[in-house]
Amino acid sequence: MILDLRPIFTSETAVMPLDYALSFSDFEFSGTCPVIFPVRVQGEIRREAELTVLSADIIYDYSAPCDRCASPIVKEITESVYHVLADRPDGGEETEETVLLDDMRLDLDEMVRTDLILSLPTKFVCSEDCRGLCPLCGKNLNEGECGCNNGAKDIRLEKLKELLDR
Ligand SMILES: [Zn+2]
Ligand SMILES: [Zn+2]
Image (cartoon, rainbow, N blue to C red):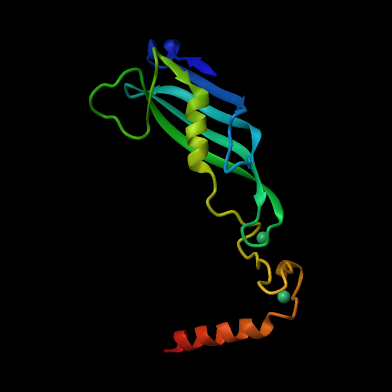
């Protein structure tokens, strides 16, 4: 989707609300796509102290197995983004937040795609205290003890206690 920002660049006070749902048919992530489309973009573009800025939330559902217990989970992820929109390189003031426009037009898909990749979770667990799988029998320890790993676990804990007591 291409947004024509000419109205906002030629006005001092204009605000342009953003509320879009985007899909990328060619979006892949290690062969599978954990992002459930469409991705929603909600926010606004406005003139602010001589700058044109975009602030928005990128909201999507992410579906992947838990890193520890492998249960399939879906979580809603909200990534807040802020960009300065510049119609041409002006020499200074350019930061990684800057998005360069092509003839006052913003390629919203391209911007969201880049922000989306940066926002993908590197750690994905069903809950912070997920206990994962037993390394011996593979039982999901969130569902209860399996019994076979207790000995090994105690030895590790004892070792840790020794270290901490020093
Ligand atoms: Zn888990
Ligand atoms: Zn076990």
